[in-house]
Image (cartoon, rainbow, N blue to C red; front, top):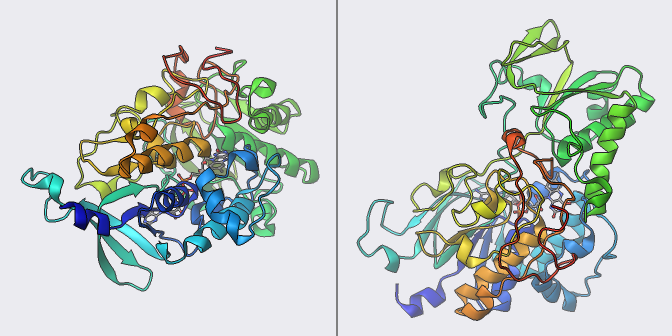
Length: 454
Ligand SMILES: Cc1cc2nc3c(=O)[nH]c(=O)nc-3n(C[C@H](O)[C@H](O)[C@H](O)COP(=O)(O)OP(=O)(O)OC[C@H]3O[C@@H](n4cnc5c(N)ncnc54)[C@H](O)[C@@H]3O)c2cc1C
């Protein structure tokens, strides 16, 4: 690909979520043409699906600086930095206005179904690096398109692929046929139909991260108004000091508070915890479900099940690219050791940018939630820093690309406690956490320390 051609081609960004839109804002700032392809009908389509969930990050931690610069001349009013939006607020008050400024650089109803080097499948070496990328798209009106791109930034998230209930990472026996009684998202109890589904019912909640905490707290609130509402909290690990997260020691106070609300639900008797339980099968018992563990334990029947065991990246449409991914986390190889819950359980993430996010296939990057693969600790501010570094590199500004500056707030927890949507296999992590590497530390809302509290 000669330089002139490369300059004329857009950088395709997959997904108009928070990180994809921030990537587009950084590209515009750098004078590079972005084209954002979004499968849904709006900006933040995935975020809108959890519009009822209040974030544990403040507005101040959820707005990318380049995005803010783009929005400023439009009269956009920055929300109070110290307050906590819901997913719906984030989408409506920030992501949609940002996408609107980007205008026709964002296309909706455009699902990316494949990415490859033009005319070169995965095994062909010859002339590979000179070829642009070809992006296969299916539109919501049923058309197929091919878009040529100089680089591809995949910010498609992991929301569409929730992990199943089975302890082996595959669906439990009977999980698929019991789908009518199993949900994989935090329920929106302000919706009367959803409320009726759980009111007065016995519900199993599987998982040990922030989403499980949120579900337990919501069901406890429901129990105060509806007799008979009870949660059975299924954990693969035992209960320890760390089970409920960092509480008041968490540098994100709202994240710490989630764990404390779950603890209160258990202590008030609205939820009972079942520990060391590795789900293997779901059986029908009349109108109810019985969950069976690998060790043969059978739980008393429940009416509903909510599985909150994390999410996974959809790598299917990247199959013709030469990606370097960690075999456990499915995160970029150089990033994985920095975020592996088997190694780091404090929520501290070391500075990373284009170097850690590059693949053997030059010019393709996984960013945002997807870059973490199955690791549970992703925060939006991490993604904003990732795309700042990558776009600097695409613009040829290596000095800025290398100058990654990021400190994440610590959870106040070491030893494998739930941080975000904890994959159930993270519970055996030793969490030998966070020996500070030689890194720079410039805070995004946190003091300059890597491993304090560990
Ligand atoms: C319930 C919940 C609460 C969270 N709370 C916080 C918090 O408090 N603080 C924090 O920092 N982080 C939080 N996160 C984590 C993270 O910041 C968010 O998940 C964030 O939305 C990730 O942004 P993203 O752009 O990487 O992915 P997403 O928001 O998932 O966006 C991906 C976009 O890509 C689109 N897409 C997917 N596949 C395709 C395709 N093939 N073609 C085209 N488009 C596609 C999707 O429709 C979506 O719009 C939370 C996550 C969840 C689920």
